[in-house]
Length: 246
Image 1 (spheres, rainbow, N blue to C red):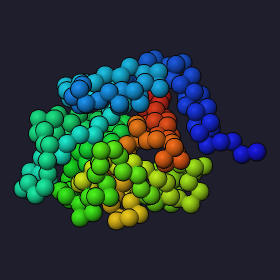
Image 2: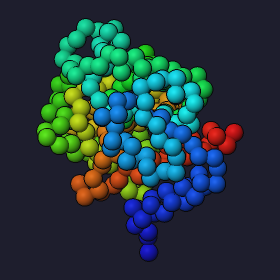
Image 3: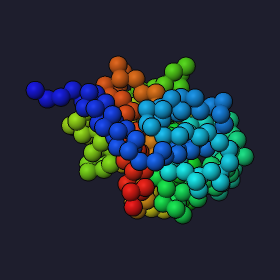
Image 4: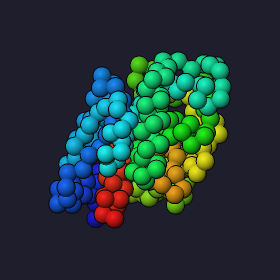
C-alpha cells in the first residue's frame, strides 16, 4: 500500500529534526517587523532551530538561513519605475531586506522568500515587477487567500519535493497578492506558474540556495489544496544542513 503523502512528509520532517538536533542549534532569521511575522514564526517552529525576527540586516550574516516574509509592495524606484498601482509601501523595510539578501548571497546562506519575499529576491537580482496584475482578482485576498491551480516545471526543485502529491506536475496553492514578476532577475529561473493567467508563482536561483514562492506555504490549508507547506519547510532545512555540513 502506498504511504499517504502527508504522513510521509511528517515522518520525513521528524527524521530531519532528529538530524538537526544532533548538530549545533541553527539560527534562522526572519527579516521583518515583529507584528507581521507570527505565522512565519509558527511555521519555522517545527524545526529545532533558534528563530530570530529582526530588522537588523547584520543578523543575516550570523544566521544559517534567511526567511523573507510577505508584506506590502516594494518601492517601485528600486526596479526603475514610478508608482503605478503599488500600495502599502515600506521603503525602510525594503532597504533592510535587500541588505540582508545581499549578505546571504555573498555568503551562500540559504534564503526562502514568501510572497513579497519572492519579489524582494527578484528585484534584488535586478528583476522587475508588474505593479498591478491585469487579473489581480485571481490572486489578491478577498478576505481570505485565493486558491488556484499551478503547474510546476518538470525536473524543478518544486516538482521534486511535491512529486508524491503532484504526479501530473500540478498543485493547488494559496495567493494573496496583486503584483507579480515582470522580468526575472539575473540567475533566477521560473519553476512554477499560475494556470489561470501564467503569473510566476515560484523561482529558484540557478547557482545559489535561494527559493522564492509567490504563495504562502506557512498557511496553506490541506483541506483546500490537498497538500501542505511542510515539503517546502523540509527543503529549506535540508539546504541549511547541506551548507553547515561543508
